[in-house]
Length: 503
Image (cartoon, rainbow, N blue to C red; front, top):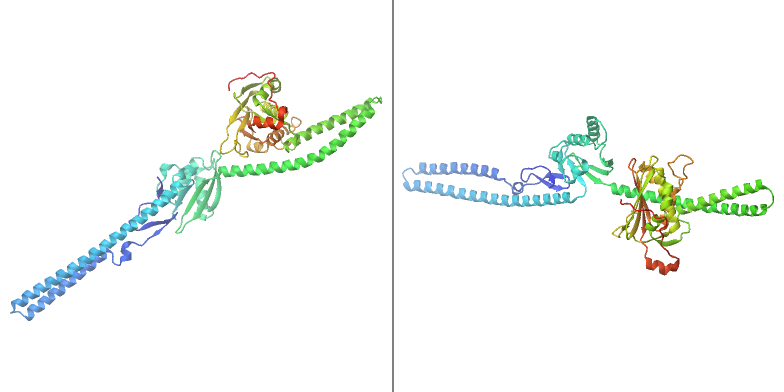
């Protein structure tokens, strides 16, 4: 049930709109005399009529003291006149009261209808709302207000002071670790100064973001609307991240293109020089040329990895079974993570096939396993899982269209990532490792390969809570893939099978 305002005398206060109340004309004001004044008027008129009647009767009796008929006519006439006047006035009074009651009932019905409409509007709002009067005491609120503000619902009643509500919020930790009385005094000072109106953002405990829109109302006081904008903030952040990654990808592609041209010239001339020096009997020059070729080939490998991030590399997609890929990498995975890390897999039986480059997918899994191992220097648990995600009204990841997807998740129990690290994790050359221990291209390559395959990557991590990297790949249409690619399409094979443990 919504609560709006306090109980007023009938016809005195009526709701005229959201957050606004004002005096309304009563029925008696529109009819002229209110019933109380009408009664006083009728009483005075009757008294005056009675006096005049008896004065007239007295005059008749004094003027005709010996005529009994005059006595009778005087008394009868005065009494009849008095009764007729009394009946007329009573009829008029009854008419006024009936009209007054009819208009009062109409005013009550109108007021009840407006109040019901307002309460329905307040109840149907997905946001919280609160109104205070000129004395900064609570006038109105809806059911969502306690949820959004953190004020206990049991303390909300008409007349509750704003300072008491702020104190309850501070004690509940809504404003962080602050001195309660000092924070209440500070906020009340801002409110009295009028500097707390407008639109404000407030971070709630738990990471939710509230938008507060506070507007003054006529007669003093203000109304505050509380809206949860966490989803909007996250969407804006994802959009900025996507725009940043797209810009970095374009910049990387341009640089890599020119760098690749330079490397092609270096490698071509070095190979010619190596062929000319073959058998020349100059081992020192041969070693130098071999070193040049080795460095150029490392540069070419760097180019390929950057092209993977920029989604410009040449992929050879095939219909693959991710379960078979994980099985096939069993021995390599165990040797990569080392003895200090326990490996556990939970592969879904009946997993859908995915259309992806088999070799690049092995590189993706290996990169994620290496990152997980490095995040657990004291050892831990590395979990690999697969799952089918049937299509719905939206994709499993915010940037993916609706459809069927295959998920591969790799989870570690390591140090985890801060929000800043997680936002920048896919950028080329971004790394938290010490100098010489990583190039910062592992997750960039993962991002590029998966994105170019039509999928998405999601990181769920927090400091001290470990990290989960989820890869979403579109489900492959096997029949269409074979029709398009003929016999070149093949499933991954299980070699050096990795034993399955229950997760």
